[in-house]
Length: 142
Length: 117
Image (cartoon, rainbow over all chains, first blue to last red; front, side, top):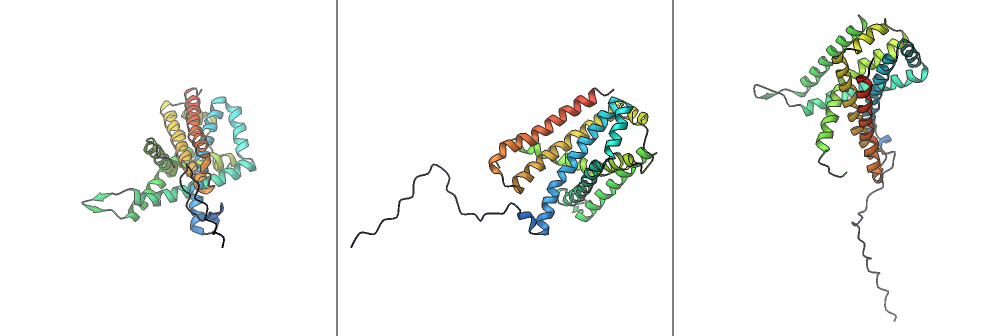
C-alpha cells in the first residue's frame, strides 16, 4: 500500500490572509430602491460642483464685458446646458432635502433641558431655506 | 480607507459646503442658469449684475460660496467612486483628482474674483 499523498503545506505569504468575501456586483446599487437612493444622494455632488463652476463662469463672463455675457446667456439657453442645469437643479433639490433630513440627527438642540424633536429641526431648516430663497429671488427679480 | 489626521478638517469643509449648497444652490441654479437665459422672468441687466459683483463684499461671499462647496463635492465624489465602483487600488489617484480639483477650483475662483473688472 502506497503512502497517501500529504496535503501540500500552506505556502508562506508575506501578505495579509484573504478571507472569503462574496463578490459584489458593480451594479449592486441598482437592485433595491434604498440602495439606488443612496447612490443618487452621493451623485448630488455633481449638482453642487456644477453650481460652483457655472457661477464662476458667469462671473468670468461678467468680467469680460457685455458681449461675452450675452454669448454666455445664449449658450446657457442651448439644449445641452438646459439639460445639464435641469439635472443639476433636481440633484441640488435632492441634496437640500436629504441634508435637512440629516440635520435632525446631526443637530442636538435643547431648550430648557429637553431635546427639540427632529421634525421641528427639519421644519426649521425648510423655513429658513424658503426665507433665504425668497430674499435672493426678490433681490434678483426686483 | 487609510486614516489621516486631515480627515476631520476635510469633513468640516464637506459639512460647511453641504450647508451652503443646500441653502443657496437650488434658487440660484434655477434663476441664474435656467429662468434668466430662457427669459422666463425679467432678468437683471448686465450693468446691474456687474456693479453688484464689483462690490468687494459680494466677491468675498461668492468666493466662499464657490470654493467650500467644491470641497463638499470632492469629499462626496471620492466616496462615490470608492463605494460605487469598488476601485480601491486607485485610492491615491482618486484623492488627487477630487481634492486637487477642489484646490485648483478654489485658486481659479480667487484669481477670477480678485481680478474682476
